[in-house]
Length: 430
Image 1: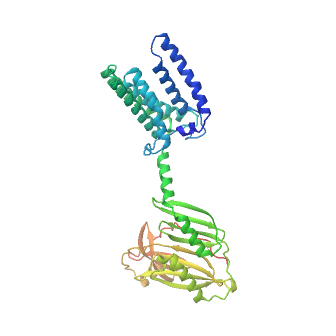
Image 2: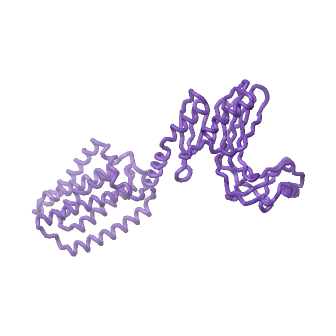
Image 3: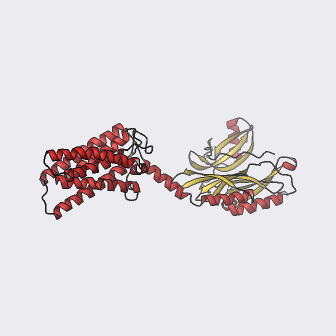
């Protein structure tokens, strides 16, 4: 990459001056000894010295030695580094065509030269990066330079040197050189796709635009005024969804973006507060928060409230569950409120109601089958939607001998529901 070398000024200019003299001086001497024109050969030598200096000057940046970025050159016309590569190869190719009047052979030679430069960048510990994007930019610069040189020759009405042989030699050189270079890059370097990685990162950053403000507002709503967000993180899930988590001075909160769906929050002070809030008042507090921030979880849901703990530090847990045809849907929402009216936290599982087959096993039959399987007496039964093998099924949860038995409500066969990916938050200390 050129940007690394340009950032090395004045080392770049000094190195270029030394190498230019080393290349131009013997070139001029040879031309004078052979009584040939000096200007074009010397200028070409200086142009090649410039390419070598800019592309191979040791740097501390770039991909690790032994690697080459083979990502598709999608940004060759929008990247400043790639455009600099294009400009770098224009003078040399143009001067080469003017000197030898063999545009195809010169263009092929500079293309192969470009590939070898990238190969050296890949295998030599010079801190430079080999990439297909750079090779593409170099080739574009070569073609532009060769075209300009050929155009100038045409304008001056000069003849090209053996056009047929030039075409044959140039084509052969391009094919053989490209094959050898490709083989070396594939066998002697480790290929990486930095372009795809950068694009993925850029898409992730663009995809979470606005999420930080949303999670901050949600955190203030649950933890109260004076909440300050210290850090936020975004974990990409699939191609378009991100789990946004915010750590504040009062607790943590997380939710899905761009769905704007909260899944949990928990106060760092997770002890109950003494107070006089009644169960009805706690329910009203929970409903007020849920209606604004978790509306999809309370729609058509049945609400229950229970007390957890004893004494003044006990808390209210307000639960929301949705039922369809007697089957508990996978949606879950539990809000914890202290006796002082403070929302301690919540956990939410915002699953959509799945389409389920009609259950064929009654509660009576489910208890009988579970009792036979566990060799005991069934004490409880609950019909709920569960994922089994990745598919939603109506499942009986039967309590037998202080253990749980799961039966498919359609077939009556024992099943094992899939584990949930979301981890549960810490339980309140009471």
